[in-house]
Length: 129
Image 1 (cartoon, one colour):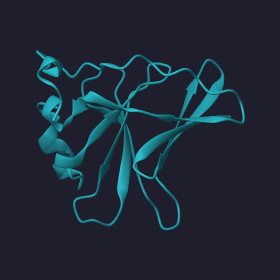
Image 2: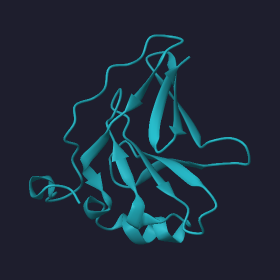
Image 3: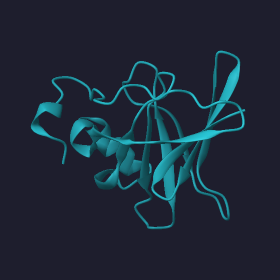
């Protein structure tokens, strides 16, 4: 559970500052943000459940380049997903789930570089290409 000072009055607000972009060919692992949890999702909980995502176990991570990644397991236990908040932070812009032999991955373009967000052992790894 997030600390009491994380309680949002409207939408969840991150506590951790944006992470620094990795250099080309390198990657970073993002830290879980204590304020971005199921308790902060408000109305999107039911929508996530309708998508087959176990919303009780969703976790938000430190943002990078203004992109806020989250991870959550599928409700049926068959894998996990990575989710990116919409630009207006009201809902989800992208969702990708594990496929056989490959972890969930989402790519976003920022200032001419492609950021690849990948689930790695319960955290979010960010690569720049």
